Image 1 (cartoon, rainbow, N blue to C red):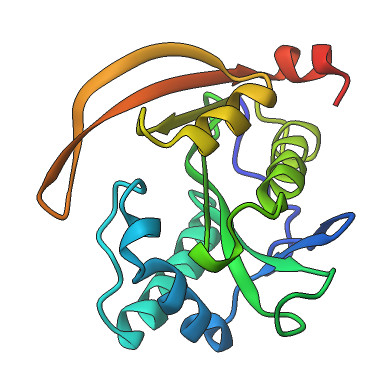
Image 2 (cartoon, rainbow, N blue to C red; image 1 turned 90 degrees about the vertical axis):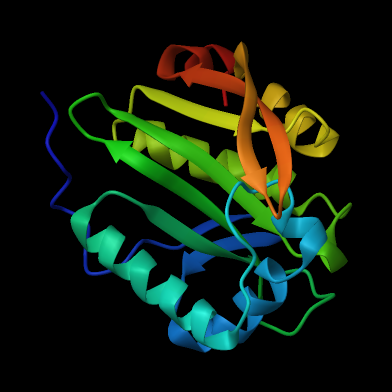
Amino acid sequence: MQSKPHDLSHRLPTLRAPGVELRWLTLADAPALYEIFSEPEVARFLGVPRLRSRAAADRRILDTHAAFNDRTLFEWGLVSTEGGAAPGAVLGTCTLADISWPNRRAQLGFALGRAHWGRGLMSRAVPLLVGYAFESLGLHRLEADADPRNAASLRLIERLGFRREGYLRERYIQEGEIQDAVFYGLLESDWEALGA
């Protein structure tokens, strides 16, 4: 049975790929997170309530840090290193949630500010996270779910080798809207077979 990794420092490592960086979130990122997660088009498919205030963004970051200390949730801020945004500004997030160390499993999540859609940022960032989950954390399985109307997220998940494992009817109620979810899984062996 795998226990929680104790070799992580007091914060997540920075992960880098051409044009993107995943880095530790700080309270200085709260205005950016508020801008991202208060946007109805972004929050619509996340299965969590929109942020309603800057204070809520502060709380989200503090809760994320507490969950990191418990090793149950790891969340990085996504930064573009190509320009098009203020240097170092968080444009989105990439997350490993509901981490189960005994089962070596986690839930993959990602969100990007509306102004940055269509730039290929997540296509570069999410593989970094998947690679880190399998190669550095020793996870065996990643899971993801997405609203069936969220075509861009579904395409990305499938390009990464995730396999559709189910259709969950009326799984979320977001802003009063009942939403279905398509459920996916990716095994470490699937990832290795892709040669990623």
